[in-house]
Length: 142
Image (cartoon, rainbow, N blue to C red; front, side, top):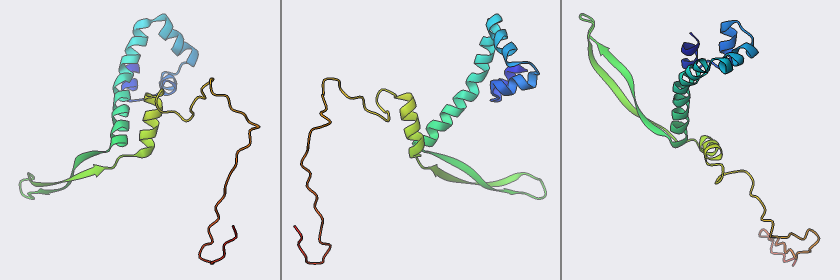
């Protein structure tokens, strides 16, 4: 039953609750019985792959065919005609960012490490020029 629940995508906490045991017992069983741990890990693989595939589909976008209408013969109950439509899921930029940051950490991250050889003088003055356009007023306040 534990493997069945894991294949259905239940979390460890949900499995523990269904089993009616304490969390510490669940994890000690995994240490004490490696075959239990292995079976549980393998059972979780399938839903995890489904989730990853869905995330990649969402990030990249994909086309799919959806059945929208079926015509059934009222006398025989047989399907006479099935109408299908091709639809497109557009790429999702948020999922692209999420996957890039988590799968390609060395390339995509929120910060850029500062090279130690570059010394930054925090007290150095810089000349800054600000341009304020006249916005059509005809006045030149330069």
